[in-house]
Image (tube, rainbow, N blue to C red; front, side, top):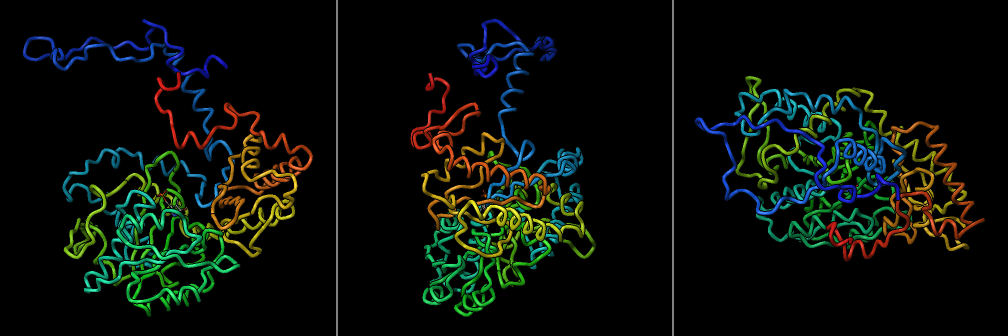
Length: 485
Ligand SMILES: *Cc1c(COP(=O)(O)O)cnc(C)c1O
């Protein structure tokens, strides 16, 4: 092990210091301020004792082990890992905004409220829905909020029987989870062989206990639900509402709008489509948009524009409740607003280019990887392992081998419809040269699987750690430094 690969505690030496602090000048009255004895710790904190240079080297080396969109291609399907322009960060970090306090009065935060209001207007324009709340903190939180809106709509009408929600078998795992958290019962609708919702199966499920259906379009296989208008008609006729999981709205930007398809409620992940860095726990933002007849059910507080042009924070009795402190993750909203304004009308190219890139990669690799649903995809597509399965090289092996070549693995073993899913989403921000290199490497791995399967099965070979015991890591995680020794 290289010296700087050690833990910071392991390079610690008693008495070594990496800082020097000035003597405290705080006084109370005439005497020097000292921390009261009862607040002092009894034994010194166990902190690493290292020089400034060692600290800098340690963290620089640790950060170099990290992989992100800015280190290399990150084709993680369903996650839209695209480049997040630096201008977004710069604007969001402007002291005029990041110095705001959430308890400031309305009068003094008119600029921030204007940004909140105009971001909601822009999202309405892009999605064809009447209004948005920007307060939910993430995609799954947006789903929960949207389902609370759905439930509130039925309750306000006295329609208390509607406690079940339909979710396709191909849905993102958060959909049934959010429905369960909202206290709704989940009913699964089947997919047809070509990967879309089976409308015949759906017809049999619709009755007066159905609150609505949750869908993604294009769905988790990257396939457009061509029957969506018919599905909307069926669900509406049965008295239900349509929820759209717009976590990755990428393929839709400039191409199609959920509101026009007949959806009543949707969420968007600003930290996917609208270019906020994500992974590692946020911060994110999952705005929820609704059609006109549901605006009164949106959670409190809402930002409205009064006739005199002033912005106001409004609370309503008919709201489905409150889902976040204050106005949500305002910094993320600022990044999304900057992204939308900096692209301007060019935002209409996002969807088509994301779609072109995905189809280019799919068509270039289908000779070596098995394509279970053979159709034009949208922003992402799914292979079911290698075309030649005789060597026993699995999707996991391919994902691990890609790490040796400096690529992040695609999403694997999801969706659950296939046994060896490899889900690839290139996004619109990659150049043709990057895609060509990735295609090249994927072909090389497929060849290695035939010529030297054991080498692929034992990959990765060049990463700081090799194959981890992922089951034990998940079931019995040792997360304290002590436990590792
Ligand atoms: C990412 C994603 C979600 C969940 O979003 P989080 O911000 O991680 O909660 C939901 N649905 C789909 C389709 C997604 O891709």
